[in-house]
Image (cartoon, rainbow, N blue to C red):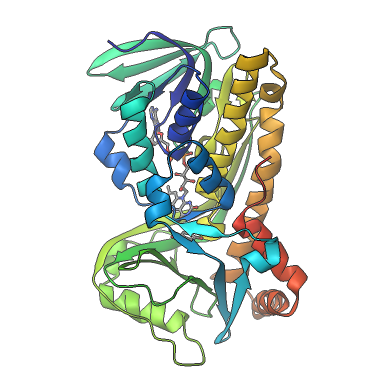
Length: 394
Ligand code: FAS
Ligand code: PHB
């Protein structure tokens, strides 16, 4: 019989909700997690692939990194390509030792769900939340449907981890909520392919034909993306057409070769930025994509979600241990400083590397000058490395 009251009601079983539930459990704080989809769906949803040092540290501290440490790929840099030249960004050398891990979001979700179901507080799948009421009262209420019946959950606090299309944001009154948005004039066509990666580290390529990214999931599975027009139908892109276009965009002097193989998944992802302020109203908090969206070029989405819940879990633990709400009251401002830094970095990486369909030759020369500067200046390279490998969690 599901609980009817909890300390922290969490809406959404993506990385933000699952990591928050894990951190609260470790602090002895009662919570209930409500996820609208079934377990299989959330575990197979292809999304992010890069973890910052701070995200890995939090997963380790919460006891959720055993498989990550066994199977994750540690990366000390990325390669930028433009005008047929390549330049490596050396993260540890430029950031005093920080690095990144390649470990798919799907695997993090699987690991956290397994822990949650074994040791954690209640995690209900196919529990769709359709309203959050009383945000400005002492006992906010979540209305949800589970097993065909309408139910309610009263909470001391509610945390909306329900992503960009979730419901929690509606708990903030329109007169209070401020939304900042930017849409990019292109999308990404993302593929998974059963072929070993053609590189040891990620390659981000600027080309007159458009952006391309070579990432990976394991020593035998590659993850690649290429810029396409908004509204692109992935069905119009055959494997051969995808590989031909990727090969053209990664072109570089020297003997580098792009390995080809069967494409096992393809999807189109729109590029947008969005921030909702504040990230708290009364006793309702927003975390992760429920509060902010970044274009994936800077590999920030998942890591921002983790940073939010690390700050929030620490604040709930302070309240439980000392009675002080100081960190809770600072949550929104604390997170928004990092959110806007990540929004700017993601905007920088996206606009520096993508070719806007309508951009002028002058704009292209400015892009090339930015990329030349990163190759020429350790200071410019360090700015990119610090932002990519992740700023220390506050
Ligand atoms: P999520 O969206 O992951 O999770 C929200 C959860 O809430 C979902 O499981 C949803 O089912 C549930 N939910 C929604 N409404 C609900 C309701 N009413 N009741 C109950 N549950 C509800 N980031 C990168 O860094 N790199 C990438 O390559 C990348 N690729 C992406 C591709 C796509 C298609 C998308 C959409 C995002 C991508 N992102 C990427 C960003 C992505 O990784 C997010 O930042 C990350 O999933 C954020 O995690 P959450 O905040 O937990 O939100
Ligand atoms: C990924 O591996 O999915 C990935 C990596 C880096 C990005 C975006 C996506 O910037």
